[in-house]
Image 1 (cartoon, rainbow, N blue to C red):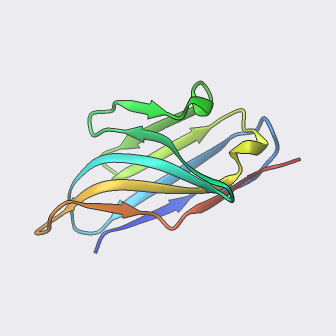
Image 2 (image 1 turned 90 degrees about the vertical axis):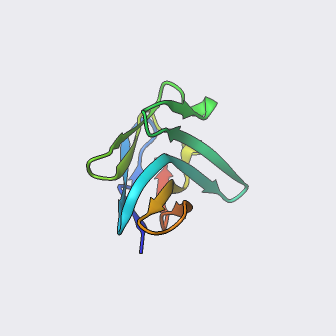
Length: 119
């Protein structure tokens, strides 16, 4: 069974930084795209994505502040967030398109990690 486990959320002051991690485990043949979404009370947004060959995309509000990366050897995706703002407060979810051994491709989600930006 494939699962994604996130870590790294927490409370940070405006202007601070956080690094989120998401590790995939289980019987994994291949991981294609990976990404981060966030859910605030009033909206859900795609924050950043990274393809299997390292191409990245970011939400406009995150450009210049957020960096997504992945370690294919560890089946892990990261989101480095700098210059955090109160409007970045949300539950952050990682997502990955995974092909498990013996199964077809599927879309998998982490459990979510809370990020709160407040003084």
